[in-house]
Image (cartoon, rainbow, N blue to C red):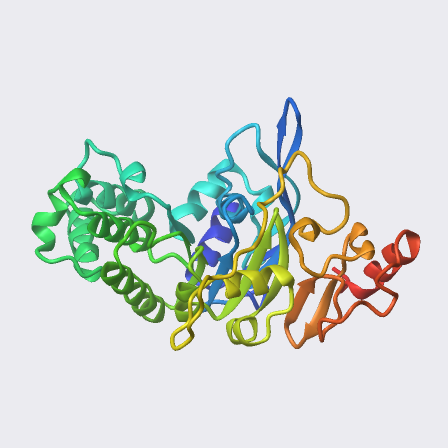
Length: 363
């Protein structure tokens, strides 16, 4: 009974044990394999306030989607969360039971997956699938749930919602299927919406419509959004704060204006330099040389050093997650003005480790 009361408090916003809606602290999600342990998420920490949008960026294989699935506790075996906490309004999801997670998923946290065609059931109509989510989490009858499904299809901007509700996923375009996924995710009025590449493979016009829709529904429902994307233009348009991930770690974190105007980590610089800018002519776009390291063969010390133009001997020691400015953190040995560290670029060993520990904020 206590657990059910607790879940009700979270859903209705009665429980207010924290200033943040969601707090992820030192999260570790590992996948044991025959060749070793893959540390897909390795010490990730961030917070999201109610009504705000957190953008999560990075190359493929950096751990963005696994972080989102960890929050939903949908990690497929043999993967599992081995450390850290995920607190939803003070309630630790990591230690939640299966029954508690069924209450949280849909009611409190909903997720839009990357490819709607593989996420929607091809043998059920779109309306039936939305109505099922509504009836499962909203305690509604069949007719009431169907009416809610039609209403949600109308809310996401699809014309003739009654007809669309009776159609199957293959009868709709990619943009419309994505709208159905958004309608399903929002049908239970979640406190947090996790959107994993919500505009992937959509044309520019439909992409803009989807983003405007998400912004409007965020304002209407006062929900938080965790937006995972490769598109920095989408981040600039949608996000309040940004987390940059690389090889399972957060390498930079700040508000969106600071990330674009004053990036610190060389990886963030590389991502920003690789996109075209209006009014700027270049023969070739810059690229980040190399690829994300094999998770079974990670380099010692800084994970980005093999691709970094500023690599120094001290990078053989794991860098500090140092504060660069107000609410601005970077996992790098470079100083705030991007100069070699005060301990000396060639410093290695115990001195570097002690310095890194001293420069990193205490957890």
